[in-house]
Every structure is written in C-alpha cells, then in structure tokens.
Length: 100
Image (tube, rainbow, N blue to C red):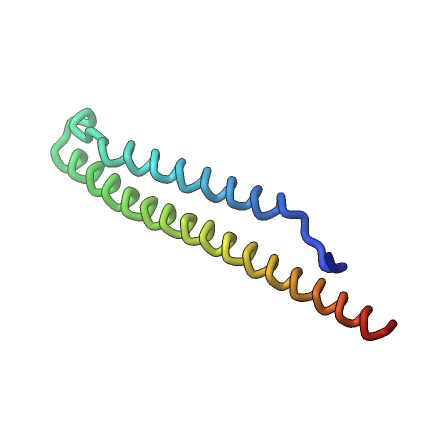
C-alpha cells in the first residue's frame, strides 16, 4: 500500500450515522402521519394540527431522502478512495522498480 491512508472505519461510522438519522426520520414521519388532531378539540385547531403534521411529515421525508443520498455518496467516496490508494501504491511500486 501507499502512504495515502484513511482509516476505513471513518466511512463505516459515517454510513452508520447517516443510516441511523434516516431511520429516525422515517420513524418521525410515520408518527406525524398518524397524528390525531381531533384531541385538541376546536375544528380550526384540528385542521391546523393536521396541516402542521403534513408539512413536517413532508420535510422529514425530504431529510430522510437526503441522508440516504449522503450514504450513497459516502459509499462512492470510499470506493474511489480505494481505487486511488491502489493506483498510488502501484505507481510507487513501478517507480521503485525503475529506480533499481
């Protein structure tokens, strides 16, 4: 291997963190979706509670999508970094052979 190093657990930790965020966002979205506004009593307030739940549910869904996108990007960075590291190692081997 080359001198280019990045601990592989960095990518795993990032993926685990973003996957956890995505899972929590999905759980929050499901909870908001099942919000029962009727418990607040007044008709207008019930409507406002449902509107709030719908808007936040949408926003939380979008955040979940973005965290899933971040996981995909982390995977791609990990893959490309591995390729770069391998190419650099091969380049160093080739340079050492030429130097002898």
